[in-house]
Image (cartoon, rainbow, N blue to C red):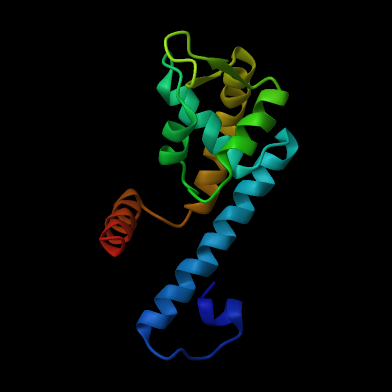
Amino acid sequence: MRLEEELKQSKFKDDYQRAMLNILFTSGWVEAGILHTLKPYDLSSQQYNVLRILRGSRPSPLNLLDIQERMMDRMSNATRLVEKLRQKGLLTRKQCEENRRKVEIAITDKGLALLEELDPVVEANNKRIFQHFSREEAALLNELLDKLRG
């Protein structure tokens, strides 16, 4: 559906304003789809992101700063996210033997099993979101978004 119909607005100041609003509106739409997908698993999108980061770093654990630097939403409270995931048994936090000030964070087998279960569900959500895109269009969108961020 066109942005004009979604926002019930017939015109915009210019194409730059329309593009900005389109990105913001679409971001919210995509995020809502992700939240709907993750809700049955009692995960937020930020928690899911932390688990994926830790799975990608295996077998090496990461510290909190490493996780924060790799997060999609860098404004998230990584300390709180890690603690909630630890309470769910999805990751561990251990003091580093060599440097007592450093805390090593690693995904657990339970966390890996959850991601394995989620992988096809998330893939189905991605296919739904991009159902009207060819591979070439998806590649072009990636190129344009990278260009936007400079």
